[in-house]
Image (cartoon, rainbow over all chains, first blue to last red; front, side, top):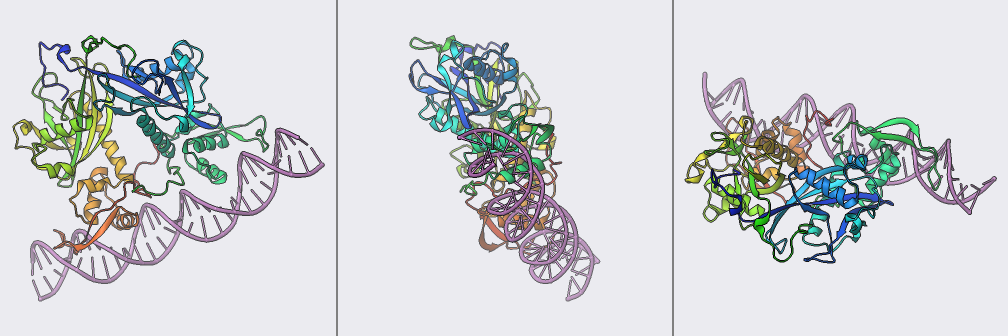
Length: 251
Length: 251
DNA sequence: CGAGTAAGACTCATAGCGAGAAGAACCGGA
DNA sequence: TCCGGTTCTTCTCGCTATGAGTCTTACTCG
């Protein structure tokens, strides 16, 4: 009910102290590998450990807080490299609030999941110097319960590629079917049959639309020029692109 | 990072006051209709309006808080009708924390979604007297942003029936295929082809397993005795049961 | 120039699904 | 007791989607 206890002369300071933070699982693809943004912790607890970027929520929505943290850590100040950040897809993941997850006090953390096209290495800004992209398979032993948050974020990302056109959030505004396939391969961690993927992507209404153009050159290792596409207007893929080796239903 | 600002001599009372609550979207099926548990608000703001059950988080996990609120409002005290509550499926829905969603102070509310077999009308307990089940299509004009939370919960529930065996959470421990079909019909709000549904349910591995028994009598309006099943061990349905008239991909 | 590579179009067999039909079991009312 | 109506359960038919594989063509690199 969001209420009960207090009516008129209520003083917020009478309440048990609970801090609300946001943590961001920011994913991008660099050199064909799925990477997550991590920061190096300087303070206790977990000093020296890596953690997901995050911080306290201010006078803003939870989503704005997540976007602000992401901008701060990547060195992309919201005003400055605005166009870059606008292409970031952000969605709420889950909220983690077990007592004791932070040894200092009760902290309830709202986790967000961000998909971004390849962003620059965040060595620029001062605050961002301690942040960097790490291939997800190397992101272990994170601070707090961030291992769990990352695992949940990865599972969500993998599932979302199945039934939403979110893979296009990892590419530039124009892309080839092959590039799109490599996004799927990087996130799912397995190769896909090129011919079937091609047929599938083009058969799902609204997934991609042709630009009429082709790449200026063939691929680095040969092959013909590929047709270029941009994201279509579908928000849901139907039918979905299901992951192949999901060792069938989980029991 | 869950930290930053404070180190040693930190006083929690220095912080901006943020309250953390849980709200529960509890769904059940009564008389073939999907119903949600609502409470009547007595206090301002939104006095007289209906709202989702919920309250402040104490020294407990968020999930425990949600289950406690649900138990209090339904009159099922956790110790007492324990077996009933154990059959409730509970999962985190989403977190709502827009500034201004509660006019009194900053309230971040973690919403939970609960699926329950037909629970008794909660007229018993004192605290529960103002709670009752309402068909979801009649649950409008709720307090705060609870209309939005309910809508999100319904969409989640409908989606979850597609790829998880959660429909069995609405039935008794043993059920017929027809009863299961009526669960889907109630949640999705549309009739399903009985023959195809039957074939589908039995063909998905681990969805249901036969008890070898049949109902003692035929249906109220006729028809032969139906075979009885219980929930199988699958946690994911593969292939999924897709909703028919989802007017195809959302654009 | 030639080997290797990738794009894209194709075939083929199989699985899944929507729609409909049919038979049998069972109800309640005439 | 008989009968119309209802439900369970199984089947058929046609279409679509999918996995696996082949083939042609266009390109890069050495």
